Image (cartoon, rainbow, N blue to C red; front, side, top):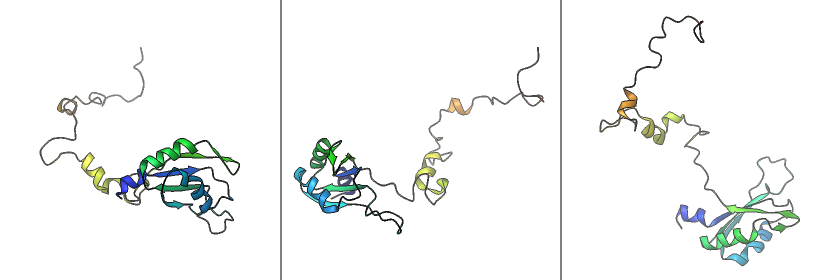
Amino acid sequence: MADAARWKATIFVGGLAPTVTQSQVLDAFIPFGEIVETQLPKPDSRNSTDTHRGFAYVEFEDADDAKEAIDNMDQSEFFGRILKVSQAKAPKSAEEGLGSKKAIWEQEGWLAEHAGTHENGTTNGHDQAVDDAPDPMQGLEGLDVAGPKPA
């Protein structure tokens, strides 16, 4: 299955009680369709006594089954807790955008979008009239005090 189609068939299940197991999540969502995989991410710290982080991902064979599960299970009670069930979002790449370990101007997407002049001679989507506008700071060289001129 393609990565994009895979994420369309995956749901996020939030608000799980600490006692919930992977098989219980599987049992709760199997009525909505064939399940490929369930994941209950473990806590980051090894000293934690929690068995999971309070949420799960459930991947269905079909995206329509995932939508059906969202429609039926969102805001339902499960082990004494109200579930938040929604479409899972694809994880952001660690190499792209803010928060990556690579400088933003070194990333290919940013450079292509913000380069001054493209190979075909066009500027970065700005109107030529805007680029030729007079400098708003022109004529302010002689001022030595900020603010309005005294009357």
